[in-house]
Image 1 (cartoon, one colour):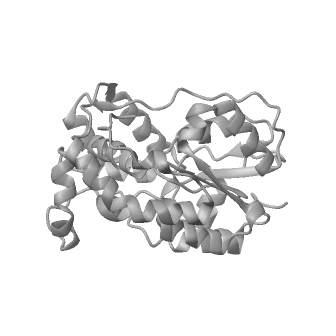
Image 2 (cartoon, one colour):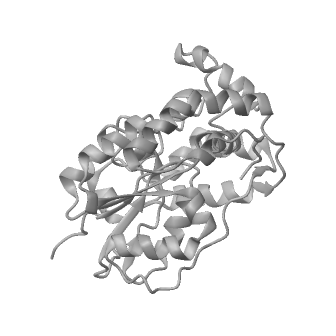
Length: 306
């Protein structure tokens, strides 16, 4: 009897660009099977994740319950920044389809910083100070204990999309790769969903079950966050004895329960301008690569959390 199939659908980026929303929406499509776990991170071995699926058998086991759907997928948005992930997809997936969602890089960095503070992967609560800390961190100083991933702290670098867009364009054929603007999805979710379904070769007339997009949230308890990020050794030993992904799923549920919605102050205007000027050449590069008009990514208004 044949084992589980290697997936042929990959949501490969970028973090904080509605990848969870898309993972959940596609999971409700009858022609699509999405892995029970989001962000398995199996194919991005060149990035520094501790919490990843380690073996091929464990990875394929997440697709064992697929029942003949046309597309079997997973969502690991840090694949976008990985040199290895697109090659691994190319080498292992039959008839792959790769989705990459791109969001205004300045807006996305602000949102990503907030998420990383909540997860314990960022210990500097001020976005301005976290940006300024990058040179120290590149020298191994001022690093948090939890590095998920270390590359996420290089805000100035991960603001750049161009080299990664080019790598994916060089790896995949046009019919295998689709870039989607985050703003297009927020403006016309049903229309973009139909376009994505057509690209995937699944029924575009299915009405999407699109969950509410993430809002800014803050921690209820720093102690609970720290416990989940770095549990005591006895807890780790018990978790290692539990089969499957139950410990990871339980941790993720507790993590969500430890968050509550909250307003976040707009990004300071001077910082918004500085970051946008930093990103301007890369934005122009992406415009050339994808044929997009990204003039709205060059606006000057202070940014609120989204």
